[in-house]
Length: 286
Image (tube, rainbow, N blue to C red; front, side, top):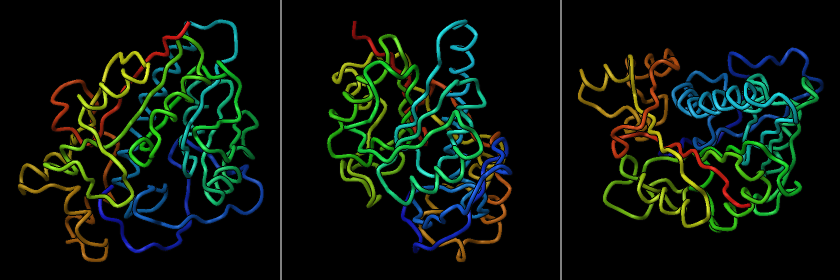
């Protein structure tokens, strides 16, 4: 995301295909920082659904693995799970076990109260992503979305994801496209980010760190959002980052509140103009 609004606390809710009726006990509220999108908040809906795109791609990969894997447990790791909405999405796609890891204690407490209580196959651990409490080769598919740009020791992080993922397993990394959000500079505009990447830079980094990059997709606007940008000759992400929600023009706020998953598309073309990058990699160690 771009410049964050003033932090506040808001109640959160799950995405449409996550049920929370069986949640036990109070769910700790998370601060709305402007960087971590939360479900169930109308002003966050654009950012939230844009992040959901990567989880939908992960769901597709889980279904493919499930169809080919008649025996053996399919375990998925969400490294940097945040609020936790992705955990149930990964579980409902066919994972036998889903592990969410996040360093922040409040975030971990929230995710643990919101999701594992409703599904024993989901667990949440508070952990540094360079020191995961998992055995070697324990994970079938690892996802880590909108995380890499926040880190200082990226090689150590990527080495740890590979350690816990089985040989031939998949690692999926999503991150903002530097050319879109910080054009013409190596210093991110976003104060939460330590580094941002172009598609070529991300591919080189992942390859240098030992991953076999199978494909890099770009997340682009589609549907109503693309039409508004074309007709009004504006950049929706830029406008959302320039002012707090209460200062958005009425048409922009309506657009954000009404955005749907179909207002985003994922493909391999025109990566330099994409919003976010999604790299799908294979762990190649013997």
